[in-house]
Image 1 (cartoon, rainbow, N blue to C red):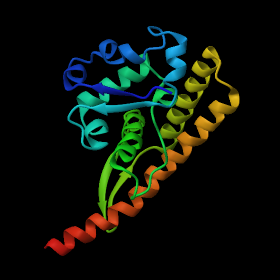
Image 2 (image 1 turned 135 degrees about the horizontal axis):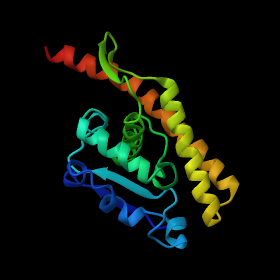
Image 3 (image 1 turned 30 degrees about the vertical axis):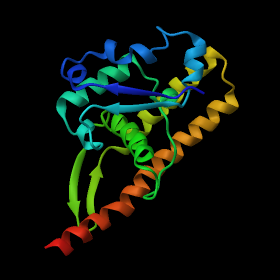
Length: 186
C-alpha cells in the first residue's frame, strides 16, 4: 500500500481552490489502481493548522472544507485513521483530529465552552452523525466501483467509528490535564 501525504495550503483555503487541492486524490483524475492503493493511506495536513480549531473554528477554512466535501466526499475512503489515546504518536493524533475537524465543519451551532473539567465542544450530534454516515456511504460507493470487498469496507467503517469514539474519549481525558496544569502554573 502506497502511503502519501496531502498538504492543503492556506492559499488554496483562502482562494477556495478545491480543484487544485484534490488533484492527486481525485478519483475522477487518477487510475482505479491508484485509488485502490490510496485506500486508508493518505495523511492529510493543512498548512499552518496546529489543531482541529484551526479548521472548524475559522470562517475561511469552514467554507473551504464544506466546498471540498461537496466536490470530494471521500475522506472516509482515503484518509489514514487509527483510534487514538493520549499515548498515540503525534501524527496519529493529528490524523484523527483533522478528520474530525473536517466533519465538524459541517455542523451548525458549533461552539466551544469552558467547563470545570476543561474545554468542551457543543454541537448537533444528529448533524455530525449524518455527516459521518455520508462519509461511510461515499467510501462504500467508491470501494464498490473499484472492486474493494464489502468486508474490507466494513472493516474501514468500523475503524472510522472507533477513531471518532477515541477522539472524544481522548478529549475527555486530555482536557482535565490541561486545566490542572494551568492551575499549577498560577
